[in-house]
Image (cartoon, rainbow, N blue to C red; front, side, top):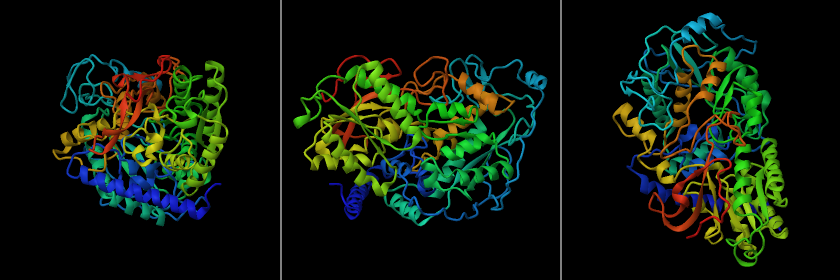
Length: 611
């Protein structure tokens, strides 16, 4: 029988207690070390993204990851009233320092039109004679680095745009709303504080996460440094941190809340006159595109069809869910299908594999679940499996997980595909253990379930020699270790070490500034889109956040293009006895020496796991 509500709460509290103890141990080990982890983001970053499933990236410590992915506010609770954003500085700064500008709470909802750009002839004249994406130019960059063939604007970065020697030309001035001769206005949208967010903040602080002030300070240092070293064609980025006045985080995370999201967009367009917003859920992003406002890091895991519908305004970091499902169907179809489930235990071990997917019930993700089932049947002759559609509501996780396990066991499922958040498997593995049900647990890599810290919290007897599959990230040691890009860049920028528990939004800022440089002086959404599609792949050789490219479609079709960054996966298996990057037992082990695979590249052979 499914657990009662009190039992669910007790189970959830028990898991939270386990998380807290795990992070106490984690904090002791990382104290005093440089860290390039994505937040443990400080209260503000957690609250901003807590219901957006995964605003990229990729570089979070596990508690930060979990908080980012799961909505905590009661779905029926009304949105809280907004408060005015406060800042130490309310005036625009000049030179290379971005300003975190205070925005008044007054709103205007009247329509507004974009600033007219230069004529086609003027734009052509401005653009003539240079290519912002050239790999062959030599000379000193604006940051003082030597530019040459295959050198990036920040030479040690695997993700920065190609370098360009310092440019002293004259840009065409106001090319679009939020773009003038001197500046580019970019807004970072936040949400009001609440009782739930304060509780989250307290846990983050207990776990050793950076404070809001530390995270914001690091972000501003990156923006200030990038304004110095990237070629922005005579302009500087002006960052505005703005608090939502009408949005509802939980509703937007679930694909709803459009009315409030659109009202926020109106303020950002009419009052702030922004060129772009740094992140936004599906409802907000849809409204932004309708008002021709760019969103960089839009709806996480949403399908490419969503992005194409709103081209050229929306761009993402984590893969679109179609690509994930194409790659998952290939992985399962070539390597696992129609064979005994030899990595299951007990009665399940000798059965021919039957898969099940555990997937959120949002319409966009459900569409991608349909793609998986279709590809399995038509391309790999795999019978349709079981499916459980669950609600992204943390208060229901324990009950939903228990019901799913009952269903999967009754239907003879041998292999569960984890297309879900990182908390649900805590309850799923506990429920399976209690029912003497021992399936294979097939990792898909979504929601940062492929970070070493995560499976340490799952039922150990269940995942030992049974958890394996795909990972979109690089090894956790490369992500959370001290030698990654964020701390190295921060050290170069400030001469000091990046604070533990935050990366200051490094990789998102890197994409924004790379996009701006690649576009050239005539900055418009259309020109930026063309530059993004033409940009070279990133990530080699360490692939800290994967192979990034916008050059092929979700099914791997070359030249079809997509609007999200990460395109590939690697294969891993869980070894609970291996030493993790942080000295704690439990780590993912790569197969094939960490080789990464894009669409169509998986071999037809059994995974070489648990060796």
